[in-house]
Amino acid sequence: MQCIFDKQINRRNTGSLKWDVADHELPMWVADMDFETAPEIMEAIKKRAEHGVYGYTVLTEEWYDAYQSWWQERHSFTIQKEWLLFCTGVIPAISSIIRKMTTVGENIAVMTPVYNNFFHSILNNGRNVLESRLRYEGGAYSIDFDDLEEKLADPQTSMLILCNPHNPIGKIWDRETLKRIGELCIRHHVLVLADEIHCDLAKPGCSYTPFASISEACRDNSITCIAPTKTFNLAGIQTAAVFAADPVLRHKVNRGLNTDEAAEPNAFAAVAPVAAFNKGGAWLDGLNAYVWENRTYAEQFIEAEIEGVHAVKGEATYLLWIDCREAVGDFAGLCGFIRKSSGLYVSDGCAYRSAEGFLRMNLACPKALVEDGLWRLKKSIAAYRAQKISNFHNPS
Ligand SMILES: Cc1ncc(COP(=O)(O)O)c(C=O)c1O
Image (tube, rainbow, N blue to C red; front, top):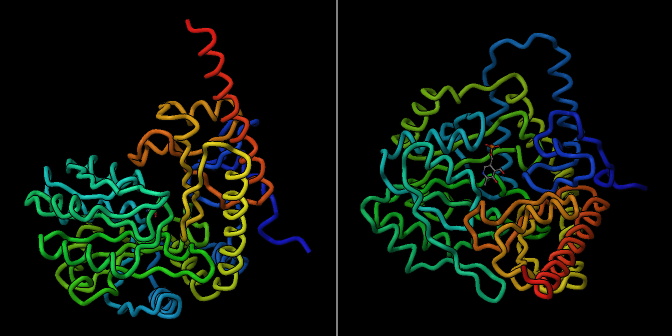
């Protein structure tokens, strides 16, 4: 029997950001999945659509219950109903919270390489990006705590945006690490904004630790963004939530989201999370198992077939972070070269402020596409090598 995730769906000409590319190109860049969402969610959306009246919408009790039970059952964490606020997306929430909780010219710390839209949210609002670069040693990432503390201790630093789990490196931060981050932030009066959008996408058997679960002090010094959109492939529905346990923080966030007009759901944004969290568990387990097979396949393919290229081991997200430096050095045009030479469209590591020579490949697609993408990558790396050798023999 064919697995539901093997089904190839033609997304061309559907207004898809990811698939709006030339016919010969294979997009494996932006973080959405090429799978249909869970049948239970499609059912709920169809039912809402069939109602035919799409007036102004409010959240029902079910919306709160769905978030609360999911976090309780899946992540052993209690979110109180009154902590929860609706937002049209995690990035709208982050931008709004930056505007409300920090002032122009302040520093916002991030641990790089990290999700590129953090930089845009910070810079678009006139704040400074203060980078603490993650250490990369022996194929693994870790936090340089001395550097992080130095950045947090700057009195001009007012917020840390924490990516938990961490896009693009696929890392789940453990409890001890989160505790250290939390303590440093409290010591230096830095508010933590935890983006936990990738929390459900983990290797079977692995789970993430909500930052707010570390301690009461961490919980009360943080605001967390969560959503069903990465997990269930609903980004186009624009639905997310923010929670803050501290009533003063929450009041401010609520005012900010309202002022920014990002606090009201459309008709589908209100119902999709309910179906997702109440009925999507089995589908998600199947998805994680499938994506992890894709990841294992990709890691093995790269090690066996593409000399000088290494997949970085991760436990979360469907994004594979690939180190090509041994093969291409610090070649700045790597992604453009790959796209041109084989049609494979992946994300350039530099967008996340990593060193040159890294790229991010989205594995949330049928295995046949993963295979196609990896052969294209192999072809492009070989073409790069051939070009380098020919340049060496025929210097201009
Ligand atoms: C870490 C992280 N946060 C937020 C988003 C986007 O969230 P939204 O679509 O809800 O704005 C993404 C999308 O890739 C992401 O990786």
